[in-house]
Image (tube, rainbow, N blue to C red; front, side, top):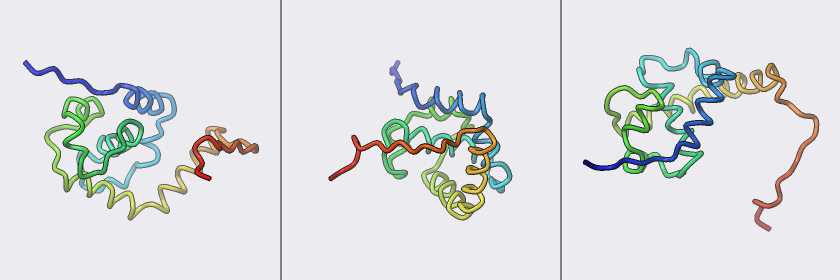
Length: 123
């Protein structure tokens, strides 16, 4: 039997933000079109950025299906499906940005102070 491991940090953050705020369901509601796994695959992309941050082309090579199932993906996923999710996000970006900004404001996540992190800035 083959052991399968994957990082849980990104999954825990995604689950908590969705449970406490409904972030993903509120922002992406209605733009999935006919895609069955749209929202879970959005979570796969976010998890990728929170963990390994590999290219979309390499997601299926770097993350096991067990991780994707944990994020709600049902069935197998083709690489082109991952790209379709990104294409759909790009097509609806102005709507998503407006929803995100409204979400941040409604949940009182806006601060009038700006803290700049110079530790990650290249000089």
